[in-house]
Length: 530
Image 1 (cartoon, rainbow, N blue to C red):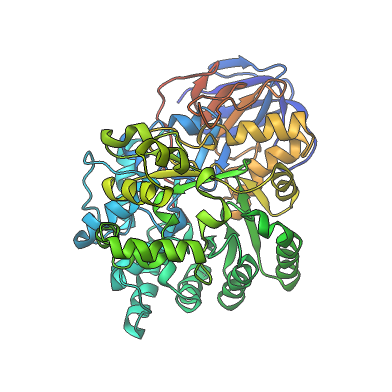
Image 2 (cartoon, one colour; image 1 turned 90 degrees about the vertical axis):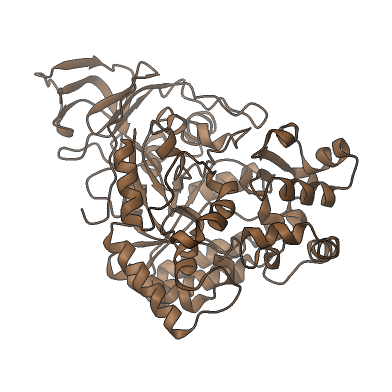
């Protein structure tokens, strides 16, 4: 591997300390030296006037399938991300017992997509990670073992509590997947079958994760009406298991819940004061994105996607769905209530038949179809067999800024790599923080912003050899122009790479050169403890 010298740049090293002028020498895939007057590399790049930072770390990614199909993962590498964490929201590819492949692919489709181009018989996390290695990814990939996959292997997709034998099976599967190199455990308590679980099973799995110094990453049970109870549940899981707790895409949804923000942040402070390790990630937008099936009451998904599709075809059950969506179910985050059909937009579908729905709100789709919003949404989910993505608007810019300033926060994308019109966070989250919130608005200093993209994220994941510009670290480096970096994608035209990314280096090899991808595929699968 050729050695590389980044000459004359402004180093922002990921620790949060003030930027300094220095050269950075890369040799054998690692940072060999940081200092003035360095020389002796095979290639020298003049980066005068540019920022030399650690490669950005995306702690919430949904490239799980896409990395096997398009291993360059261009939406990430082109915004400076060199490492990402897969296996999010308790619903991902592995483990996947062969008997559940068909229903699980349908359950997964609205979140991570679907494809006939891969062999789905990998069964375990170890085999799945070997598939990623064989694909030669363009950036480093890490994995969380998902609660929903564990639950499915142990007890299927039914809405019930586990028996003692099934709970022991969950502990055993968790240990197997942690031994395979998972960084921790994820759950998404609005997604099926995770939503059927109660605290006890999560505590038992998290006890195993804590033995390996892993992290518990959670899309909590409520980000809306019952968010305070939800926060208390998560903290109690951390308290009883001893696991490190990390909230996914931290926010408070719905105007009626914005007055809860002070209490939400107070709970974080109380947990830290008690000695519980807590952190969260955030994408810098006022809208979220997920599978449209999440708007349905949880009972609709009982038994898996095939049964959900059958229920959507039943007129009487549709009436019950409407009743529950209009009146609510205790403890259920009702997207239609806190966002409204007018603020829920279709981002992706599976078939050409409904391609004209992409980009429309549910209200607009209903008008186009000549029906009401409930029928339009139900028909779309039925026809697409749940493989529909959505964007929902829920918050304000001031909330984004307030959460961004918190010491627990690090940056993520949570970008869904589905066809259609994805949320612009997929292409622009990191550049948006640097360009809009740091440079233009001064919400963070440049050094604070870089730390929240690099060193802080590495700390959350116990990555000890990445996330900093220091001698001996793996040479994952992003070089950008602090004066011009900015996201370009919008909700109507999201597929745009940001401005200002000059060079991206992954394990010592240049992947982005003068703002263009080189075709390099030099990423690695990072397994915990290896």
